[in-house]
Length: 132
Image (cartoon, rainbow, N blue to C red):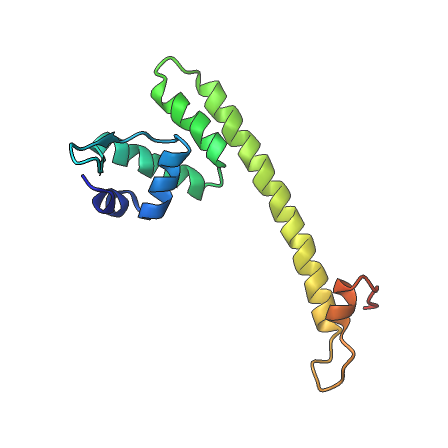
């Protein structure tokens, strides 16, 4: 199938699919006319990669996950280790975001939001401590 159909079936854009091919994450065949020719298996792999990316896995982690998926002699411990590592990373990011949210709430609450030029939000961004 052509890239448009593969994109629709996988939920990815043609540009993303071309990128995945450029970085050798996938390797579709070519038709006689030289155009990419995606098999059902290629589309399945593209969907696999899209779902892994949706879960926050990096391109390199997707490469590892795809190789593990294709390796019928794999150990599920390897896959679980990758998933647990991603969970830790997500938890760390959530903690960072909560801190950011708290700081922004604090400075936003101390801002009058009126016609005065003084602005605690800009002061905080500039590195000036804002008193609550």
